[in-house]
Length: 237
Image 1 (tube, helix red, strand yellow):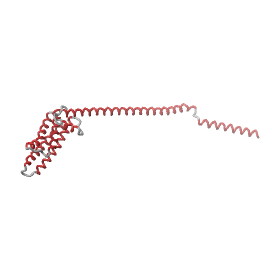
Image 2 (spheres, one colour; image 1 turned 180 degrees about the horizontal axis):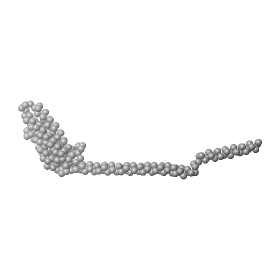
Image 3 (cartoon, helix red, strand yellow; image 1 turned 90 degrees about the vertical axis):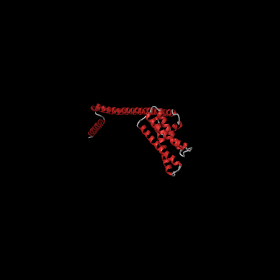
Image 4 (tube, one colour; image 1 turned 90 degrees about the horizontal axis):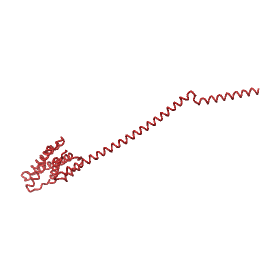
């Protein structure tokens, strides 16, 4: 009886050992699947490597694009600076060529938007036109306020008409510039404007009088003179 029990115990121990061995074999990949397992893991590693390589390449590409963009921006800024410098030099030369009113010319050249002889001409005409319109309105009001028979009525009326003509001449000159006209066309129009710019002051002087608006009249005449000078001396407008 005791022997039978010993045999049964030994059989049970062997069975337990086989069960344990069977459990261990479950956790280990089958030999037939080992190659597939390694290949699958290799694909994962390769895929991860490819992603990292691609990311590195993209990072490099982005870096190269950034560097190129910076170089392009620097080149554009340098070109703009060179162009601006050349423009400023040409404006300075245009003012230096004038026989008179150089100081006024340099003052006008510092106004916003002036970057070439042509824009200098446009600005000088604009300044003159604003002064002429103001003078036209001023003399118009003064003429209406003057009493009938007043010795000044005649000169006020003449100056009113004169500045009306100046406004018209400057408007024509401005339109000619906008249309790309240059050379003799502009010089002719500005010469006519120049005559109108000084007539009123001359009429006061003939009567040994000083115009109460002499300062504005002088500024208008100077701006017209600058525009005429630039139109006459600047070849490339």
